[in-house]
Structure formats: structure tokens, C-alpha cells
Length: 367
Ligand SMILES: NC(=O)c1ccc[n+]([C@@H]2O[C@H](COP(=O)([O-])OP(=O)(O)OC[C@H]3O[C@@H](n4cnc5c(N)ncnc54)[C@H](O)[C@@H]3O)[C@@H](O)[C@H]2O)c1
Image (cartoon, rainbow, N blue to C red; front, side, top):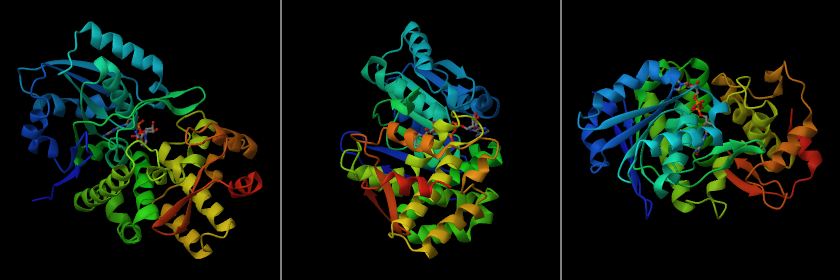
């Protein structure tokens, strides 16, 4: 029998659990519906691609007494915008949603972020259960309560903090995930090793083949450890106020700037952007004398081993203007008073925040 995990996120006001395992949606029906006891309606939010593969699995677990409504969008980051929220809000209010009703978010980070935002602003908060279907969503975006959409000024600039009632990570969902998306998700998994857990970093490096070949045991283990690490940061700083949770943004200042530069297109997935971003942040850490060359190379190599991009040569077709990338960084929401906050690395498993960096060094680290 394959091992299942339950990770508790014991936030004072909004404690919840993350369930992980193969076929866990069918094995956890009781728990899922115990979270929405008074609900009459369930609004399932998903995209057309995911609907084809997994929508029926969700329908099959919902007891007959619920009224089910579906909101289905085109896949892709471009849908993560305020206009989508407007359309969804109109739909659910028209369908007389009540405060006890629930949203089931079935999808990757895009669906999760949209659903979380919608759940948080509808009637000042309705029930929310995440069924993340990408690796990135299982290890990262479905946990921690950051919700939101993009603006023309940058990524995730409109949003709320809103914790779900439950997260159900079924590893069977990942079987239909395109390889490129799976690999992209490993960027966030590797990040957890770099920022917090050296042992996990080496374990990942040792198990690359099993992980990329979707071995259920190793995948579940890697999701479990990732969720535990994210939990530890969230518990210290739920609302990202005291620079503890910010460590999770290692590589993201560069990564978000690159995503903006490539117009959030399919040329660069989120995981790919932050993979390059983490290599740039490690390069910067090395240039500034915080990280040894040996560790910088180890970091680069783990991304290469997973088949992730490590520099801008990945964007062959796009003309790169370093100055524009630096400009994009200033718009990143993590930056205060125009100063760019960087998460730098001093050892594998150890990162810190630093913002006294001259622009020339930042430009030098972009390669
Ligand atoms: N809220 C947070 O804390 C947080 C953290 C990290 C990332 N994010 C956000 O997450 C988003 C990226 O999420 P993502 O990488 O999951 O991308 P995504 O949601 O765009 O999904 C990627 C693609 O995979 C398809 N897909 C999803 N599940 C599938 C499956 N099981 N089988 C086949 N195809 C499937 C989708 O249709 C889509 O085309 C970004 O918007 C990012 O900003 C949020």
C-alpha cells in the first residue's frame, strides 16, 4: 500500500490540513465533506485542459445532495486577471451563493490563485478547498494563503491572504501533466532544499530519475517535505510582514522580472523563470562574496540535472535588455521604497535578505 501523508498547518486563526498521496481524493471523501458540512452549492473552478483529464474524478466524489456549478476558463497565466474575477463574481452571485457554500479549485497555480482570491472577496469569505493538479501547485501555490491576479504593472499585484479549509494533493493528477510542467514544478521543490534543508537538497539530487519518472513513493515524499518546509516559514510570518516568509522568494525577484519581460508567455514557465532566477541570485551571492563558487556550481548543477534552464540562453528567440530586467525588478511587490530586496544564499540550506546592492552587481549577475 502506498503511503499517504497528512500535514497540519496549525495557523492560530485558520488551521488546516494538507493531504498527500496517490488516489487520496477517493480515500479522503469523509474529511473533504466534513469541511463543508453546511454547504448546499459547490462551485468548481478549473480550466478546459484539466477538465478533460480530471473533472469527472471530482464529480464522482461529490454526494448527490449538492448543487454543482462549474466555471471553466482557458488555460494559462493570461487568464489570471481582474476581468476573470469580475466574470466569476457575477456568475456566483447570480447563482445565489451563500457564505456556507464552497469553491473547489481544481488546477494549477493559476486556478488556485484565482479561486482563492474569489473565495476571499465573495461575501467576505466563503469555503475553499484546493485540489492542486500541478506539482508547483501541490508544493507551493495551494499552501500559505496567498491569492491574487496580475496587473499590467506586474505579477500578483492584486490579491489577499486567505487560507483554504483543506488542500488535497493527489499524485495521480500529476500523471497527465506535460513533462515540461512537471520539471518546472521541481524548481520550487529544489528551492526548499536551497533555502532550508541541505539534506533534502542532496536527497533530491540523488533521486532525480525516480522523481522525473513519476515514481509515486518519491514524489509523495518530495511533496511532503516541501509542504513541511513551506509550513515552517508560514507559521513564522503568515502575512509576510517580518522578512521570514520572504525567504520563500529566493530567485523570485529575478524570476518575476523575467516573466514580465517575456509577457507571461509560454516561452517561459513560472518554474523555469525562477530556476534561472535562483541561479542569478546564487551568482549574485557569489559575486558579493557570500556564497562559495563550489556551492554556486552545485546549485546550478541540480537545476541542470532536473532539465531546468539556468541562464538566459534558454530565451534564444528573445532580445535581452539587462537594464529593462532590472527596471522590472523595482516593480516587484516585494520591494519597499524603490529598494530591491534580494534573498541571497550563503550556504546550501541558508539564505538571508539583503538590499544594499549596487545596480552594476545586479546587472553582472544577469547572464
Ligand atoms: N499563491 C502562491 O503562493 C503561489 C506560489 C507559486 C506560484 N504561484 C502562481 O502559480 C502560477 C503557476 O502555476 P502552475 O505552474 O501550476 O501553472 P498553471 O496553473 O498555468 O498550469 C500549467 C498548465 O498545466 C495544465 N495542467 C494543470 N494540471 C494539469 C494536469 N494534471 N494534467 C495536464 N495538464 C495540467 C494547465 O491547464 C496549464 O496549461 C503562477 O501564476 C504563479 O504566480 C502562486
